[in-house]
Image (cartoon, rainbow, N blue to C red):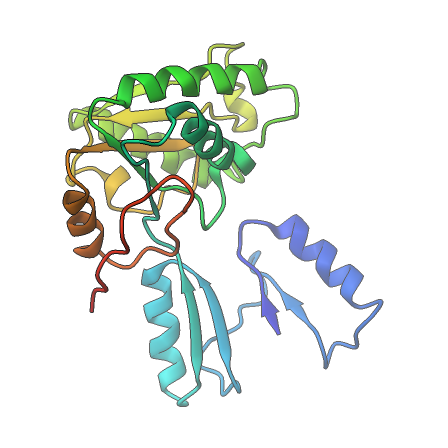
Length: 248
């Protein structure tokens, strides 16, 4: 039994229709919520695999505990990326911006915040702007992905507004035609001067917003990441900083 997210109902309908051609429903069945079927995790399953937010993961595990059902959780989180002082900024920008713009940032293992040496921020932003506008001269032409639904679009707009209200600066990386908000097209933006009071540094972003933090020593980065909930991923290839200590 596969219970789909409530967001991609079109995909759920497609999988439901296609799977029936190859598997009987007692072997593979797709479910989705649209005012319809809800699969309660308190049912006595053999095993539950859940992908989603930590808050929902806690609820799933609590429900599963009623029947001692084993649970495997893949939870979202604030996945960091670190650019080392000796790493080429352009190469870092090319790789990080490629990931951040893929599916408009709506990928579980995407870069959620970026650590840069404090003297490399302006250079990174300049390179990022050049890369974005070369790859996407018009983000309305169908090459760039829309935000999946209005609720997610509004959440991202509120996250950006919250950051600005609390002192952050948003840098628009895109300089082409005005983004089509009616189609939920959201241009990529970098947030600088961020702090822990902002939603952008507390919640998984899952969209085209990229907060930048700066550091002077690698120990600062290790301490910061190690003191927070474990990220789902730690994108590699731009860091020469040793692994962070595990948190409990």
